[in-house]
Length: 267
Image (cartoon, helix red, strand yellow):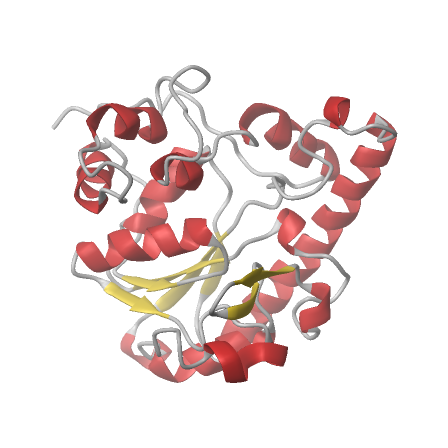
């Protein structure tokens, strides 16, 4: 079937803070999750994308039209999809990390408050993955782990457009991007080491353009959900496709697990 969205652009990895800046300049305002929720519009700026195609085809009004998203993902002519034996782990990187050791310290992970749920995390600490691990298919059965995340992603803080934040210079913004990139790279290596220590062959997938990454995630046979609404949207598509989503006390800040553990789906 012919794809209705473009695959012309391929971003090949934010391996330094300069690359993270390039990523921010090109794609940081592409907000697929927000478009699906009706909070932003994509076609004017990103016409050949899943978000724009969704705007034109969605039929559920203010509700997320999961069926349309599933069709758009399935229609993409994309060879890069996970194998049936790959456990795909999504990590919210970039501005989801606010300190040097989010892996061991939840205080170094960015958190936000969700009414009637509690305080949630974007990037998730080690204890989250420790809760998910017993539910993962075993490495002994031939399963491997693929880590997916955008190191240069930043839509939360002062960085997306320094022109609209008084007193924030490009050099200051670049310094923050550099720091968040370094913290993200450290975090990714710790996640990788965690799964490797459990005998999973683990690789870090290079970043591509957002639609290619989204398609890869949504086509997972086993998906470990990360923090944030984007990862939650992926989880809905994976479930709608009849595949498996794993999550623990979902994205809960350890300080409020007693509040939100009962609200979130168990693994």
